Length: 118
Image (cartoon, rainbow, N blue to C red; front, side, top):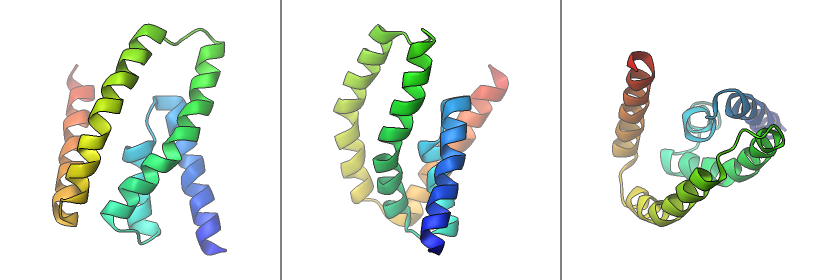
């Protein structure tokens, strides 16, 4: 029961931040799963990827109804991501948990600095 409640709460937080800020998968779900669900970094990354599909679909539907999606660019991003995702998944499966945490933290810092200074 505790896991169900935890999963639902993390999902609500991810859904709100996804719809509000366009983020939620990695930036929100992964750290919360590691901290509160006791998942390994590998499990949290994989679980987040599985959960993001319906989260993104629901939020994208709302934005599509408002006419806010650049469909050409979205298609190009999807094609590029479909090519890159297997490469990233293979690298993740071969990386240590410590290295994954370091890369994840560095990415979050880089994104924060980019957002603050551009």
